[in-house]
View (tube, rainbow, N blue to C red):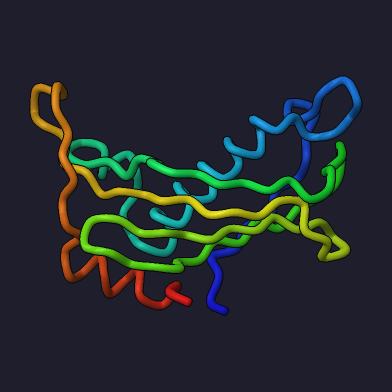
Length: 139
């Protein structure tokens, strides 16, 4: 599989009183992974994209498989399961150093156009250039 992959060290800011990652932090890590993928692999950084467009999450399914602890490094993987006209279904998996799955799931992202007055958004088809950049991550 052709994954977009990043590592992340579990820091104090990520954990709860039990010393394991508090589940909302995993969702922030997933969002960071998507943002990094758009910037590093798709050449569409959020700081430029969000002038006229967005890529909101409209559906998210997550299964938490095992805890991640302070000081550990996890490897985050992202790939595309389905590329649609204006959306894509992505798979993701976070693994620990022993390659044990910490969490996995699916996220649906929609390409949207944002009105100049910022009062309305509507889905917009991916252009051909973007589809070509996404294609290598399609499984």
